[in-house]
Image 1 (cartoon, rainbow, N blue to C red):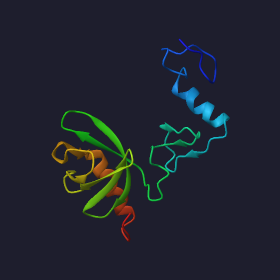
Image 2: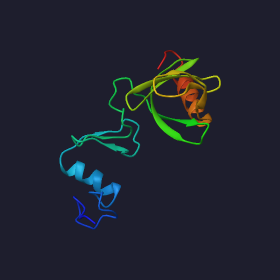
Image 3: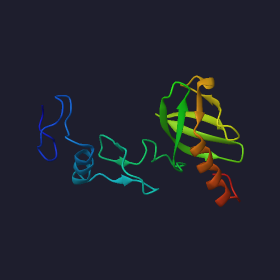
Image 4: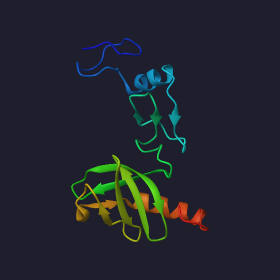
Length: 140
């Protein structure tokens, strides 16, 4: 076991440098890191420069909010919504783009996924459509 780099408590494995996610975030704050959480969500990513983000792509200039995609195998991913209109949504995940049809959540294209295996979750489709309704005069 190691000592936590923030509080000096023991880590749960020899491969970890922090005893908890909270200590990782507190260390980034103590080292002067900036928070990029435009939706007030908790920090989910800390970069090596101590930038703390609610999503790994939250600093993209067109980032709106996180949405969930799911695979037919049960796997889930949190994508960053960067564009939507009444028909489609465009998301980023690990710096790769994906396009989704809002009618049924099917993937229309993407560079790292098997299109027929992935869908936006019903909750994410609703979240995007609700946001579009509130901002009806323009595309996201």
